[in-house]
Image 1 (cartoon, rainbow, N blue to C red):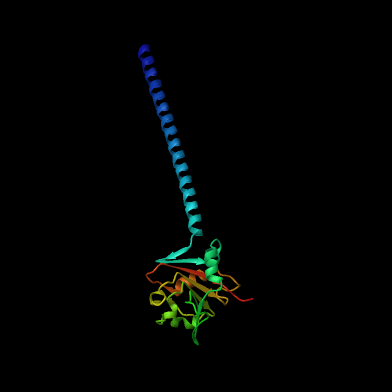
Image 2: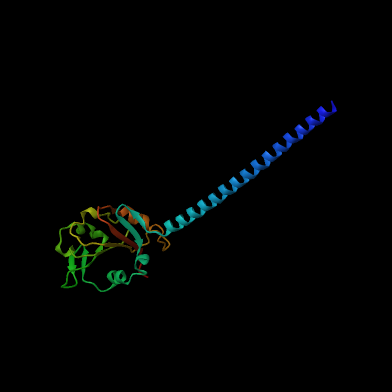
Length: 200
C-alpha cells in the first residue's frame, strides 16, 4: 500500500513538472513572438514616417500636371531661373491686345488674369512660347483651361503669380489649393509654378 502511494506521488510530481516545462516553453515562445511583432511594428512605423516625410516634400500632382512653388523649381536650376526671369523675347497679353518686345519669336508670354480668354485665340505669336506667366490681381480671376491652349504648341511651364493678399497676412498657405482649383486639366504633361508676389 505504501509502495503504491509512493508510485502515485512520483507520477503526480512528474506530471506537474511536465506542465511547468510546457508553460515555460509556451511563455518563452509567446514573448519571442510578441517581440518580433513589436519590432515589425516599429519597422513599419519607421517606414511609414519616412514615406510620409518624403511625400510631404514632393511636388503636388494632378493628372498630367505637376504643381510646385517657383522658389523650389528655380533653386537648383540656373537654366530655369534664366528662362523665367532673364531678358527673353516676350509676348505681352492684356485687354488692350497683344504686343511683342522683340523681332525674335517669343519664348515667354505674360498675361494679366483679366485677359486669360485671349490665350485661347489662334495666334502665331504663341507658337514658340515655353513659359506662360499669368498675374492674378484680385479674387475675380478666371479659370485656365489647358485643353484650349491650342496655339501654345511648345508650352512647358505656367507660372501663376498672385499679386494681392490671396490668403491674408502675407501668407501663401492657400495658394496651391487656389491654383489647383483654377487650372482645368488638359491631356499634356505640364509644370505649374505658383507664388505670392506682392509689391512692397
